[in-house]
Amino acid sequence: MSQPKVSFIFIHGFCFGPSLWSDMLPFFRGYSDQLVNYSLYTGSHLNGFSVDHTMQELCAIVQQNPDRKWILVGHSLGGYLSLEMIHRHRELISGCILINSHLRNDTKKKQKIRDKQI
Image (tube, rainbow, N blue to C red):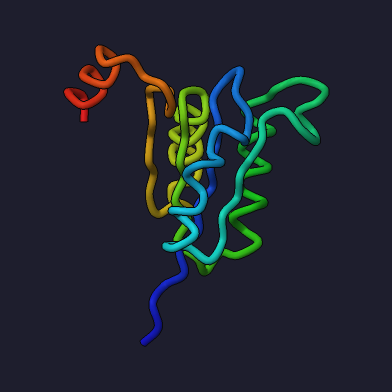
């Protein structure tokens, strides 16, 4: 029996971009055969942001390889979008990682708050 294929979709937060994930992607490559670094500021989003349209685009990505186990990784607004995707299309998503704090240069106070929340 073969292992299920795991794929990740990374969704950045407001006022960030896909480069937010640059330092983390090499780590996740070791656990996945497909990584999608989704951008809120390219393609169809150039004419304005829409949650509904984002859900359509995320569904299209997942449905290209429906046999995979899809994990959403969301930061800030990307976390809200990840939760909305699960709410609307629970059957398509296997897991979710939410990051509520900035990935880099957290102050000691923010690190302590984040660690306490975890």
